[in-house]
Image (cartoon, rainbow, N blue to C red; front, top):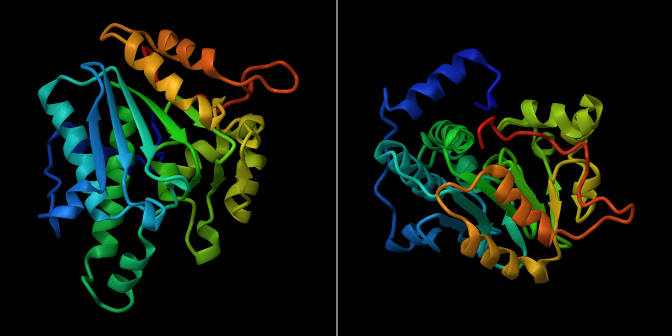
Length: 277
């Protein structure tokens, strides 16, 4: 399994939640519209899609989104039945996910509005990030727009991470006096197999755009956004319950744009997928 959390004590706690030894409570949704902040779609028995659906806030993660993701992930775990491939996408033309809902966290911690929000948000966010690394389906993250902070957390640990010409990637937490969380110490230390590169991204919040994510090894594939529809259809039509990771990856490879040097993707991409996938 992918030990994204390097703090042993925290890792054990998250493991107990994921294994069902402890219960992670889910709040009642604030409004009927809250239940639509993550659109869950079965394209077939073997292909599923999460779409983060709050384009007005650049699909920033909030408590409703996290609860919706958690309920679905825990359902697959408890039922022992899940799709083979899970797409993770963002609604709209601008962003995959621009990070966490900083406004509600600020209001809770500083203004005293729902004062438990900061604690609850981060506790649940980290559990969902962990759960995504441990689930059986092969996750394909499609970064067709801005992906930062919490958006990185729900997507960078996927074994297949697609950048397009619209992608803007950053871990900007230091700019608000925070640290690179959501497993940052794990994946940033592995960027291009060179810890100094990840340290640069984490300390400066430097933005990578488009094909640069491939050169840095953050993305595994680069595909023009106009070709994504064909990619989705190919995977939906050709994935079965027995599809191996290599078979799914080969479908993505087929749609990838070649780099100037003739390589389809960086040889130094962060390797995060688990054995057996």
